[in-house]
Amino acid sequence: MAYINIRNKKGTSGNTPADGSSSWLEFWENKKGKKATICEVRGCYGNPDVGGHVIKDGQGSKEYILPMSYGCNNKDESHVFEAWESDLVPVRG
Image 1 (cartoon, rainbow, N blue to C red):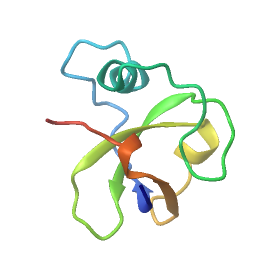
Image 2: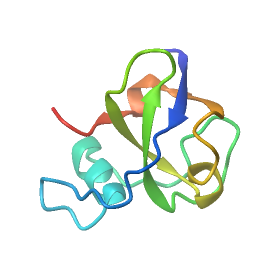
Image 3: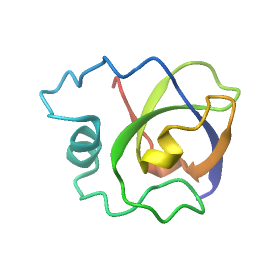
Image 4: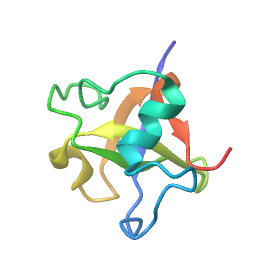
């Protein structure tokens, strides 16, 4: 496994999960089959407050959900983070 570079995708706050989940964090938990216990951004050990919309840096606009703290989720979309690729859940199959 390796870390990949990701960025926040802004303008997604009005989007809702198509699978009936009550939140994007619940969507991630349902897809992964486990409870989010920590922000999945490398180096952040905050609470997983939200399921943040992210994109892979330099790889187009395909959206993924990642458990994130409010602090990480509120960073500008130009800020590059690292996360395990295996922790990303595609918004659309």
